[in-house]
Image (cartoon, one colour):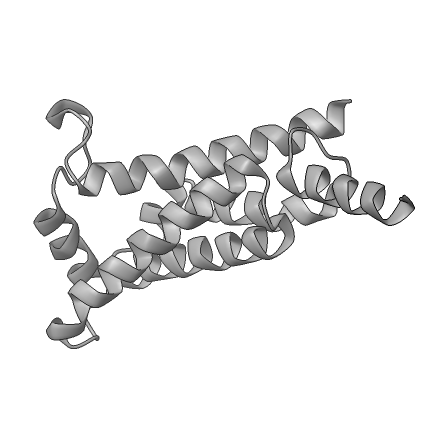
Length: 148
């Protein structure tokens, strides 16, 4: 049971983190709790992290990262397509951590636990036990239909 709960906690906390960060970009968090507070401030930060990228691509990359975080957040929480979702989540977080490192210093991603979050995402597929996962429910239904 402990492995099921650990995996569940990893999924929920990572998924909620993705959704919270995305909500912040749209100003859905109160200003006193917000990192960016609005889309334009998020794009300024994105431009800072990716200063070597042409400015006209920053809105596209910011949109792509946000869309990816929303989809990954929902998939993690639901436990849907968990193996690829976990690998993509870990990779995206590692890209964020490295971008923060090169733009600022190693202290920035360490303080924000971005490397830790990346490692957590990468670890999910190695826990085979399932708890409240759509993948398990879908697989169970397929097995049931084959027996008929």
